[in-house]
Image (tube, rainbow, N blue to C red; front, side, top):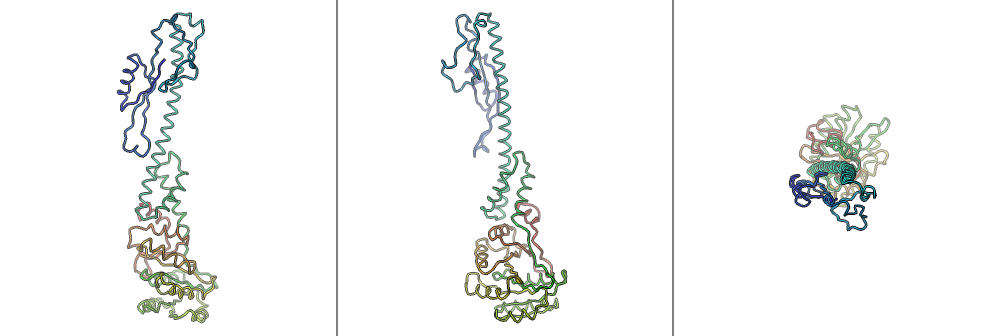
Amino acid sequence: MIIKKYQASTETEAIMLAKEDLGKDAIVMNIKTISPRGFYKLFRKPSVEITAAIDEQGSVPIEKKDVAVEKSSKKLNPNIIYDEEPLQLSKEVQNTEKESYTSAIEKKLNNLQDLLEKKLVENQTEDKVEKEEDKNLVFIQLIYNQLIRNEVDEKYVNQILGEVENKIKNDASLDNILASIYQKIILKLGQPQTIAVEEGKTKFIFFVGPTGVGKTTTIAKIASSLKLVNKAKVALLTSDTYRIAAVEQLRTYANILNIPMKVIYSPTEMQNIREEYKGYDIVLIDTAGRSHKVKEQRDDIEKLIHTVDREYRETYLVLSATTKYADMIKITEAYSLITDYRLIFTKLDETSSIGNILNIKMLTNAELSYTTWGQNVPDDIGKLDTQNTAKQLLGGSE
């Protein structure tokens, strides 16, 4: 018996190849669709593979041919699928009529058919798994592209998808894959922390960051919320003596809220101020928007912050969501040399990409805090919503 496989674009073409090679009596035993693999699979069509067989001994008289030919005496053809055991017939079978021999051949052929059907089921299962894996890869590629469009750093995209990919089942739907990545992003963002009032304790809250990010307006919004919502006793300080407009702006907010406000000109003044405000819950301190590139200016801010013991102080680094990622990296690195900080992102209404929130969080591992999205005081500020942020990063509605 000769058994061979033939591949062509269609089933009909494959059968024609088999008939031309083996003759018109060739029997088609199996048909399989083969999907292309590798990078170019998206550009190639599947092909058809058939397994065909013909009995090469059917026309030879039994008495003149020994059918118990050992497989070892024949040169194996790589195109032929051999059964697990060679076709061996006893002497009694050899002496029977041709019908008995034909019956034995048919039995052996049936056994081979069973084996091929078993292989077919296995191949179909393998193809299904491969197709499911391919589908998952397509889904993950779409999500990868979406995160990159939102300006998430590629190394963080790969990190997140790599942590999720191995846990995704082969038959996972797009919704399940999205849900897994969505939850992973939320975990990466962490639990944002805002200013909390602690009974019997005066907290000194420093706000640092480059010029133009909206520190003063952010402080006014937080002061309003603390007084009006939390009923906290709040005071304002500013060391930004470089911008008279900033001092007057903060004084205006203080008058509206009916809370005290002072200007501090040097770190040595902080000792007296601490005594003066020890009965307050929260003291918010606006620092000058100094350049993170100039060490002397950073040193001034560091000295001011360190006049308050760590137990009684918190520092918030204010960043504009519109700032370039490369600049954000340098800013966060410069201020990390001064003190620990939480992150505030302003001007979310002025950008369509919020990938830098995730980038800076993963870069610094600093806690996230407030976000702002406009100039309205006391509105347009809130605790960063990790769920909404994750949805936006994945292309969902804001």
